Image (cartoon, rainbow, N blue to C red; front, side, top):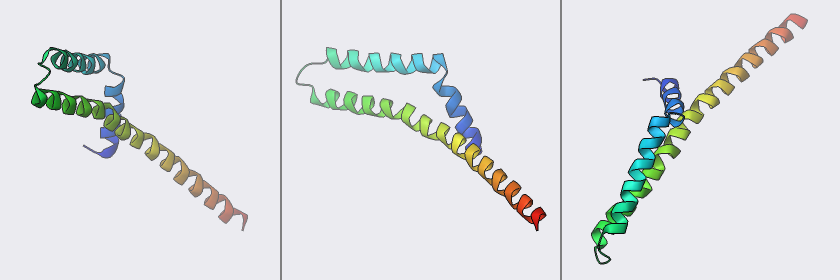
Length: 93
């Protein structure tokens, strides 16, 4: 998969209602687990906290991938502009 394909797929996932619902369901499940464990169950508390932190990173990473698509589009637009400007400059000489 090319970086642009990866960026496009990431952008699609971020707008996919099923993906967003799954993320929300996982989060709610983790919070419910945290709420129902014994107060002295530090191992489970830590495990759930780590899972919640990792879950939060998924959309952040997907957004970074999606941003690569916009950066690449801007780069291509810039390169095209520079090429046209050079062609005009050469034609003036």
